[in-house]
Image 1 (cartoon, rainbow, N blue to C red):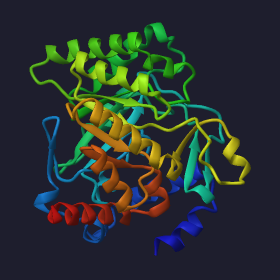
Image 2 (cartoon, helix red, strand yellow; image 1 turned 180 degrees about the vertical axis):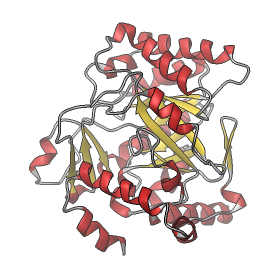
Image 3 (cartoon, rainbow, N blue to C red; image 1 turned 60 degrees about the horizontal axis):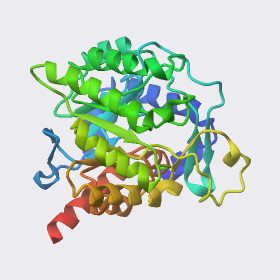
Image 4 (cartoon, rainbow, N blue to C red; image 1 turned 180 degrees about the horizontal axis):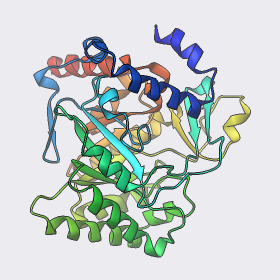
Length: 345
């Protein structure tokens, strides 16, 4: 069924159709019986699927990755598809339009996307107000935070503090995004000194509250082993809750597509990232002696892809591009595979 729907959806510009679909879901949410129908079709629950990770109770380990719902406008609609958690953002202190359009491109031959969105969002205050009204029903919500494009790196920590403070009461965990390739200079913050400054500052702020929130770091798939070693050390020293591995890649080495769009500037996601993201998960898990949780994301297009990331050491997983190419039924297929695998152990 989704294959037919996808043929129609893929005739439109990818960013435009994203908003057409999400706006349609918003309208359908108000139709009597539609939310229950979606849950009946796509939800899959079992006690074995429940997981407690960094102190939070997840009804299942499959989440929707950041970028799909930057402003927290469609959480209830996406929750109907069976996700155990949804990560909103990346959000910045001030609203910003992002990069010029077009800024998202499909590579259909590779089951991939290239995007250079540039943290387009309505600002952290708008997101916080929206999250206060969301019906959660056990759903875990993460807040992915970044810096504004015009904020110099030397002042970036202030942007992360602002987002952290505003969202503290309305999200369950935080993800510090310093790994998007689409904000000039942002990835420079992955270097040890500036990264330690940001994470230590947030941790000090976190520990001042009576209730602290898990803070995770989202990393790029383009890091070297030496840089990954630094990440392990940084997590240990700052005592943050864990890592999200990985963001999009700037590499184009694994593409078979002859489409001209493969040369567009931006972050590549989808199947070409499957192997590399799993390698990084395994490396971090082994190097750290499994001392911190990892959320695995990157190129999950099947239940097998998801299970490989869990086997590599991920505690939770997220989908994004795979959700676009494979449809909402992907979540249920993954959960059934996880249950079957757990049952066979």
